[in-house]
Length: 237
Image (cartoon, rainbow, N blue to C red; front, side):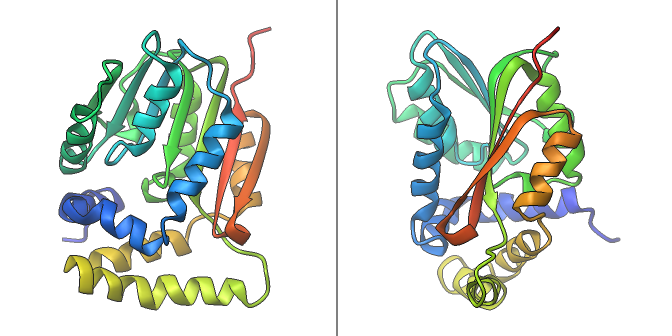
């Protein structure tokens, strides 16, 4: 029986969860932390706000958002891999934060009412969902009018030569590193595949607009190896 994309991704992250953080830093040369920090500076998160971190994984961005909104704010981190959430919960428990809740759930059908959050974030998760547009529309739905969606993900470098080097690294080197350091060749080969098929910066920005977002813009990182996209839910007239 052929696995669906959803089943495949779930099985991948359930397996690699113990080594995910270490491998993420190794594969990205720790740039993922730099990209997230740059993004947070651009977001200018307001204290006392409510936020949802979709596909939160091991909760790194969830924790950053919780720090930013402060004790009067609240953050929910949602992921469909219970093993990844388990690692994330250990991180949350190691902090003094009391405004974080981690939940098991599906990005394709967010378990929240309309207009619930001031901010929605998704970091390196959109490329792994079964249908990008469904998830974009779900995130739009749960944002409050005027609320901000912020998405960090891998992208397609446009610099000649760098583009080829980037995809060579992801296609050939990343799965080998997964095998050597995490005993997970097939799982990291899948992550390469999800990166290769993910829309480029301009196309993803167009998808944001098609999902209803306003004032859409994007900021490339490290020559386009990744990009942050921003989009606002339209304010009620």
